[in-house]
Image (cartoon, rainbow, N blue to C red; front, side, top):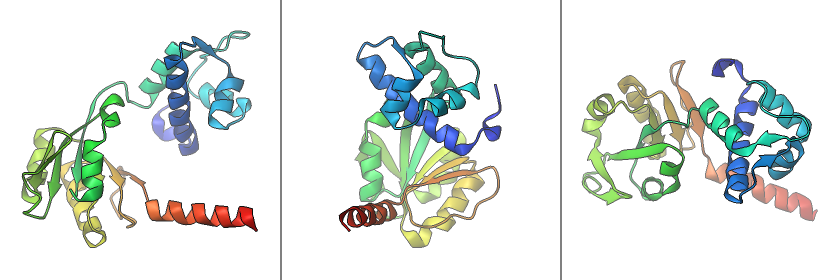
Length: 211
């Protein structure tokens, strides 16, 4: 199987879409799915589905399609969500607490085990079964619990400094809920979630459709 670094990022993103569609298909008791059906479920052509999946081997059977259970298992393995990942939240404000309380992370293999905040008023609070710890305990906690993923929801002015602390402690992936573009060392993966930008794009598209 090709190394993840050699697979185009758009393909990896589409695998996540395929996985959600397959899980829904499986929940409906459907044992097989064709590339045309799978593409239709996620708004992608059947040719693109076949091209993406061919990067990882031969999964389908002519005239039958894909076995839903088997393909779901294979994609989970490719995306490395067939195991449990420890994650932490840094920044226990409104967004941070909402993330801590979101139940589906656990279903997807992501276990949020703690949160951290610089405000003494937040320390000791709980949400979703997680306790908020002081920032002074961040480095030791990451090392002790072998945490590789952090969800960053701190104020904008603190984002770069905190992200650097996370990387220095051993964090390898950051889900960034701040509008700051983080400048980090190579080998650290950052995925940014900018709600404001998404809303701006949405309002533009609505206005364009009305023009």
